[in-house]
Amino acid sequence: MTIPALGYPSRTAAVVALRAEGLSTAQIAERLGIKRTVVNSLEWRASHPRSARRRGYAGPIISIPPQAVEQLRPHINRRRMSLVELATQIITRVAGAGLVDQVLDGNRKERKG
Image 1 (cartoon, rainbow, N blue to C red):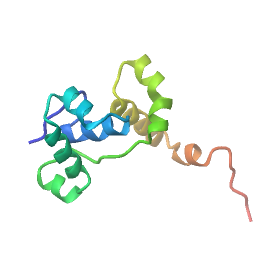
Image 2 (cartoon, rainbow, N blue to C red):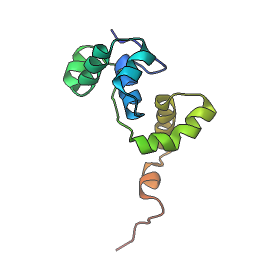
Image 3 (tube, helix red, strand yellow):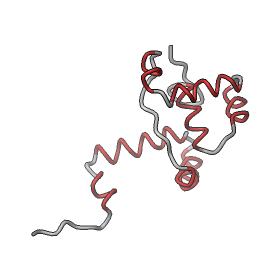
Image 4 (cartoon, rainbow, N blue to C red):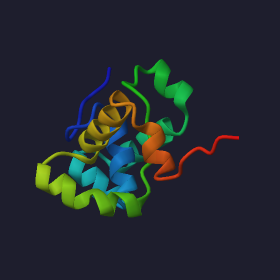
């Protein structure tokens, strides 16, 4: 059974996201209201996808580098949303608008042969 936490689809997703933000095990445990051993267990589960899928994990887990989290923080705060919510909206809108190549390739234009 998946248990949503702090706006994340699961406690596992919350643990991974909070760790990516640089929080310690104790800080994560306190925020989620769980024991540190549970944080460690959830983190282990996240690094072993087969185990997570068997237990009904809600979706993929990604790791966002701490520097990127800091760059996103003003947008997170201004919109009063979680990192996961912001990242999901950005990814959904970029993919939906067909902008993945433009975002990844920047101003680089393909040269014809």
